[in-house]
Length: 639
Image (cartoon, rainbow, N blue to C red):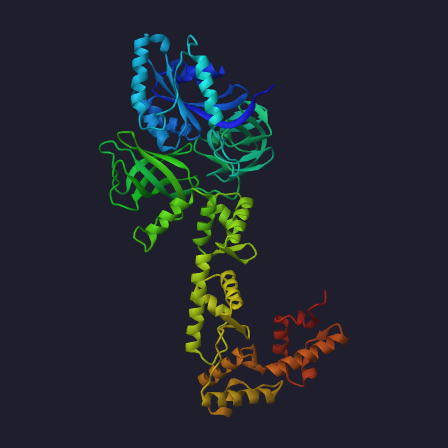
């Protein structure tokens, strides 16, 4: 019976020539030194992958090089580890890369593992005991302080049974990676296989995909579909986060794909240059950083030069944690919560690491009002997907957000975002403004109050008006239509606003006029009412009332706001009763006839073309008629 595949990846770590690769070969039968140069030099210079069967479970092992010149390769492999086998040779003891590898693992968030004391066949029992004591002392205060320490020889096999038992218990204690996330695999290598085409290999950090699923290669933006999958060297229909995998894809050029590329699902990730991050600097002497210091940034399998800018202090002190923004010199692909390592440019050494919070569209202003609190809230939010979705809704650029926008920002699958929004809505933390558009409770309260204040200010400026036009309110508020329309509808439900004449007003507002103004309005309205289908122009109204043009235009605006007159064209305004009569004449006509030649309409109204045609155009706009050439049809007709 085939071993059950578990989506877990173990890794080796430790100094060069301490027996990491030999131990992996002892466990798996695989020689992970696949390169000719590795075999000639007798040391690992690249990552090696091997399947490992413990009891009836199969996991992956990534073997990393131990030489200080290949730390960047070690970091690329360590990113995928769920647990580590720290290898220390009994004849050497703790060495420089033993220390640096453990520091890197700690910074990357690895928290499980065991210690293999190798080459015990080369030392006497007393030296073995001394090595054990030294290693135990070295591990005090680290995540491996209480880890099992297993003496083992890859040459004689001594201690192997005990090592396998401990390794089995370690695997049983580990929680496989969640498959709920968006599939993403940092590329370790790519090659061309005869008869198959391009194969991309690595260890996925999140999610799962299957045969024929669509993938995108970033930062290039090329898409393809999966032809075949191998997991732990065996054919599979699916690849899951935490599994050593090779994916055969169509149409990609293997020669153009390198370590640092990322394979993921379309629509979620994009290359970015600015990132917000939590940084912890190691406590070594002279390990602090000046603001804007240039370093090497490692995340996933990516390595790039970057600048580091403190958001909470000018100089970043050794041994301390800092909120920083990182500027990569070339765009990279990373997600919220991704671990990273920083190494100095010269001399080359590990100086710190931490967690990327989120990609940024641009550099943040350090002293912006409320910025520190917002950044701290954002950094804390990414630890919990529900909290992160709520934060993303609260801080959406448009003040409200749809599911697609939230999924892209949080890197959480759309179906899961939808479920989280339902939970947040049930809890009253967010609400729905329009289908698929959510707003945070705090945002809705603040913006609702702001809209009420804008409307009240409008009433003070224009007490004669029934209310503010929706488009004017949106412009003053600087908000999108869906946000304003949704909020004012809620305010109306709560009794704070009222809709009058297609305008928004405070619930208690009643239009008021000065005595003289009321008389002028009545006089102009009377002339328009009496004129019927041949209304006077503005100049005629000025002559009739003795008012100047600005005064007449203002009074006409008030009448329009109260829906007493209708402007059908610049300079042509009908009384609302005339427009309604004309509409009814049209409807009566179309109850008998299917079409109307435009020229007929002036005879039906007993007016001139000057007034009839603009009125017909108005009926086209409001959906009473439909124009085809010079012929009108009723809007409901299908022609």
